[in-house]
Image (cartoon, rainbow, N blue to C red; front, side):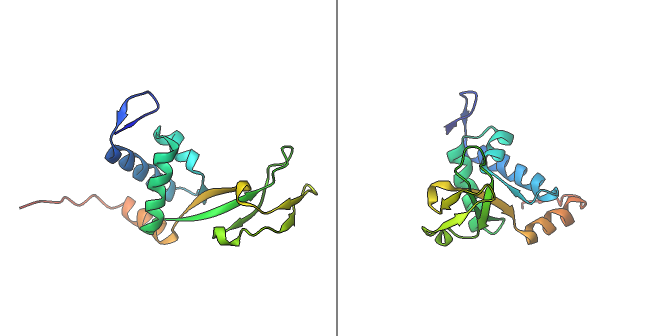
Length: 137
């Protein structure tokens, strides 16, 4: 059990169900990428819990994780580059559109999630179908 935003205890299964629902809504939409904070706001789930569960969705193939490199210049903060792996973050300099030379380090990298295109297609196909009833004998 975890404390929700309102101080109420929230079961792990409830967090998972809320996040699964939110991910399905995103999959059905035109959204290409989303930040973990979008899920925390939509589901009123603590960020550590949401991020941990989103990573399990990456492992199961529902989501892909990418890493956004942002300019550390407080007057800019734009995304300089998006990479598929943290291994691509090596200590080299890259120039931002703002003109600042930026050293690529992990402290200016932020996770973003993408719906796996196959899962997106699956959700869209199954949205129109009636839910099958499951019976247990």
